[in-house]
Length: 200
Ligand code: SF4
Ligand code: SF4
Image (cartoon, rainbow, N blue to C red):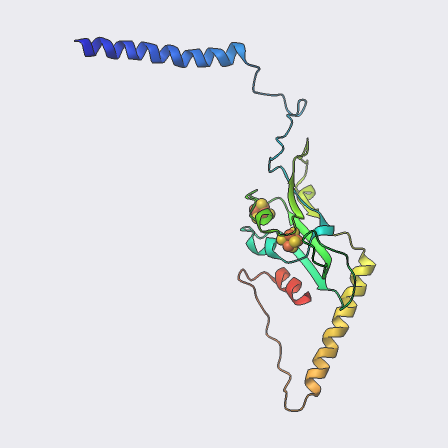
């Protein structure tokens, strides 16, 4: 009998405790819902709100592209000539790559942060802007490379000339048969990635 009344008492006290929390939120605390977009909440400093690449600190290592589970990076780089000074990286190493393209398609981003974790130079990082939403999908295609079209063309022409010279040299070697080059594929078979790697 005592157990019966004890259970009733426990039921009453737990309902009172639960309702106390509910009434505290209703009457004592500020409303949690805000009227977006008229009101904008301040982002938390560590929020994964906006992925940004500080291109001057990027070494064009392709690690972010390889680890991205949804394959949304388009990176294209060309190795600098021997002795060419492209400046220094935050890691203290010299920059060795010209970055022709560095695009991210945020339409598909999972905000998992794997790309930021593998970026050794810290160039890929999160920012917490007040406002990160956009009105069209097109605006979610972000390009971070800053190279002019003329400079890109100059570098691509130079790279093509180098490749042709290497092929001619190999063909001129006695006993070496020039073999037709098979298309290379990455683990994911991404042609853009191959283009980038070949350019390295
Ligand atoms: S956050 Fe994840 S999904 Fe988005 S670009 Fe980085 S690795 Fe890819
Ligand atoms: S991992 Fe970092 S340094 Fe390497 S390509 Fe990506 S952004 Fe650049």
